[in-house]
Image 1: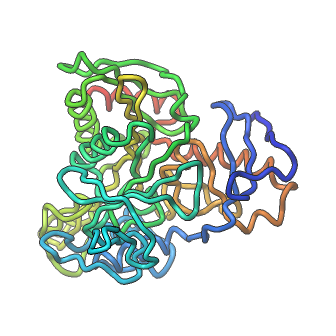
Image 2 (image 1 turned 180 degrees about the horizontal axis):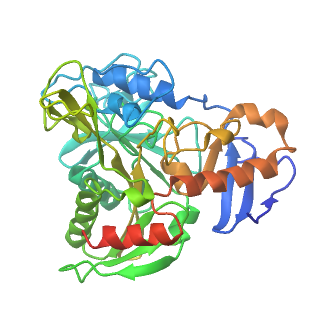
Length: 401
């Protein structure tokens, strides 16, 4: 793997975090060590989501097919059943007599905006991963969910603030961000390397001639859509999501669902995360054994404006686990956990590494190692690798849109 780390010795970003670039085969990746953000273990992120969503928290390393994903789909956030905890950093209160909307914990002011006819609010992130780093959160405390409504809300935000990009972390453990319990987006004024990446191959979407669609030349698996027409782009994005959610291609290790035996039946076909719990043949082969269908496919939708065009990248993600890869087939390889073990979320999938503060003490000795590891991590997230199997996978997936 070729490439070299570049940057002045001791260089820092605008927040004082160590920063350099890496000339990877994809282009100049950005590497940062964030001194303020606490490092999280993927098991802790999943466990926190499980506690928030009413599921069983993971107390140990995820073991076995799909078990790491279970925590994201337990419970039901609808009809007011999802209580907001007092510890949520993203909960905010609407404007009162003083005319200011504020974060619930810190009291810091936020700016209200309606997205999809719902109250949301945005503010600048205290971690500041990049210039003008925004957090945009729903007023309702509910779990992350990627769907058609997500696309509409991203477009609403882009119409209100066309100067900023806006995107969403995925809604499942392992491939989601570090906070799955409150629906939110991130955005800002930075131009990430992914946004400049070229199209490797264009493809048509039947009936949507007003949309330019293509596979992006990027280590992760990314579909790019471009259109001047909002409604046409919306339809194209929704068709991509609808095709990806149930897609299975085992030659690439992609399975849309796993079936897990459970101790009790509780069928809810519309549960958050797309899980359906019901009576089905379990892996034991016993007819009628209690089972849970756990979803693995999700996405990172990312939207920005170029002149009069809406441009949306949809990064295809999968959080399947196996006994051999208990942290995820498309997660950081375990041999690189000394560099990075936390979930690869929106910002990193776009080409900017957010590495843990513990590494700062080892600079500059480990700069090249960190750089090479980040590029390998990005390649690991790709569900369709750049090999014959991956190309067959792309062909099969595009035929379903």
